[in-house]
Length: 239
Length: 347
Image 1 (cartoon, helix red, strand yellow):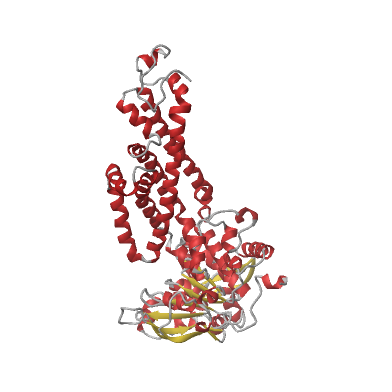
Image 2: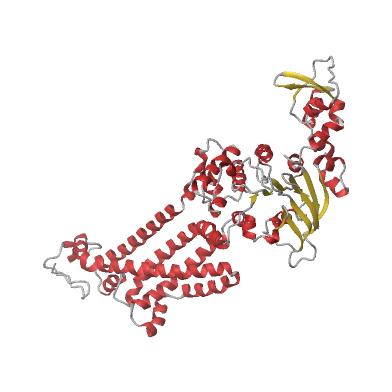
């Protein structure tokens, strides 16, 4: 018990015990940040990571399947693309507003909205990756007697990987950022301390939470870069 | 599975001729056929070049054989079996296929690329590895160990094409289809890879159908040349020498170009002329320009012309074989040319 109010309540700094920085509401108070890490920052960070991973994984599954269908049936690529783009252009807050009457102030509402934003990015990335597989490679693969499934698994998907990974990177970074708005719907994720700090201006809380969101975006992006490197060794092969 | 089954020199003893029997291809939505009643036979072990201007249907003819394109009418038989009696995917696994830009999988190493067909045919690992090593040696990528793990992006165009040929030969198919395989190479690499491929072809004896738009390549490589004209009609099907000496019509003559006569001289070497000449003349002049025995008459003529001489001294490894006169070069003895003509079949 540190004597300073946890983030859930209005922030009333206890001037009696607090540091100079906290008393003066400095831009960023390291001591307070460390003190409050376990209660104010860590739980929302974990929630945020879950929120993002769930959204990107579900978004990936849906968009990937849609892209495979659109790749096989080219006439579907247009309509699917339009739907996905429409979902992407909706302002996040408006989408929450639209969903709340149906799914309530729940994590489900948040995830539905987040998934919607990932769809168009991943869909286009998968489709662009498949479309960019060189024609001569496909022709020689078919000419050697690969069947359609072998062509997809051995040739088309591996060669689409760089594009798919870059789509996932953009979708992930975007979701980390959009997920902060989820605080308007549920008291969860890094948006929650930011929202509270905005209503009672205490700099360290919202700068700390904001910085964590940025850091999280960098880390997840970096992880995807590493995954991409491991999966595509031929991209780094040099003479 | 004996060792001999993976030997690159294994020549199929069964008939592996390719017969085009009134083959016509009409693409949907077009009113003229791409290939019009093509009737040719490629004998077992023969290398036949399909040449012609674009729009002549040569690539279509090739892709009909491995059913990348479907026949409109007529039939194609490999051996004595119609390709329509074999499921397309199974058929393709028994046909070597090499294309321009090599078509190598950029995400597979050299070894993995060569192993593609063996792997889908579920060969065991050691057999595939043995075969891969043999093939890399065959196409001259040695020491093999330094090539196995490279990616195509780490190879030059010529090296990629060699791997492409090795890959096409991987499962020891009796028949090879090659679609402008050397089209993207620079002239010097191209000559080298052509020579190597001819050597490989002589060693392995695969029935080969080879598409090229380059008549010089066809003259150099082919046992017989099929010249297609726009509309997919066969203009002439004969040996290079015969095509050059007796073009079937105006179109063929024009396609062969103004240097047709010189191209014909490129088919014969000075050594062949020396052999054909009954008694070697030994003119007293010793200032004749020297040429190596394996140069073509065309090259020898160029040397003679550059030296302003009337003949050339034929050398082999430093020793004097005999002399050829300007007359020999321009109008070689008929049996010298014939010696080359008969060579093609049954390598």
